[in-house]
Image (cartoon, rainbow, N blue to C red; front, top):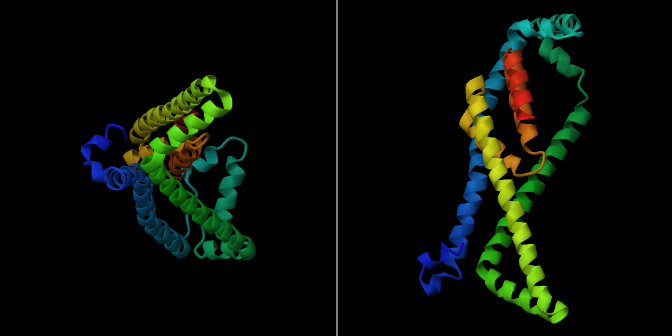
Length: 238
């Protein structure tokens, strides 16, 4: 931000500059998630078509199912009995607890709304920190000097350095992990490898965020019948 600020005239540095910089940062993080959401929405049509086809003609057990250790034969027999016949999907859904599904959907919607509000508050806070950060820093430095004396200034500098180092480490590790997994996605044939790699990199900046996404990618490969590739991706991610 200190390098970005001199690009503007003095009168714009307290309003336009922090707004544009906050907007750029928000786009960096929200943009890939929005693209992923759009791609997921498009893929949802394929899922709906697959369910309709499965309801009309049934779903044959995949070849890899019988190869699962210990439970392969039982899993294949269960699949053949419950999903291979036309109309089996509707019959299977009839056994689902509709109240539980409604509660799960409600909880998921509340969680998404909570995260959206949290993101909006974070972006708004970031704007005010860019706008008034220098004044806040001077105020905290004066306060620490009054409370702790001269050592307080050094302590404040150490705290800032620690926070910056931690943030830089998380960002660099996340970007590196996202790039490595994007390459793995492309090699192993996961759909949308660049997009999924970018989202994985963003989630990798959050502790235990990346495993959620590469586990989902492994399940996609497993569902497509590539059991060996799914195992390789899962092992590589960990």
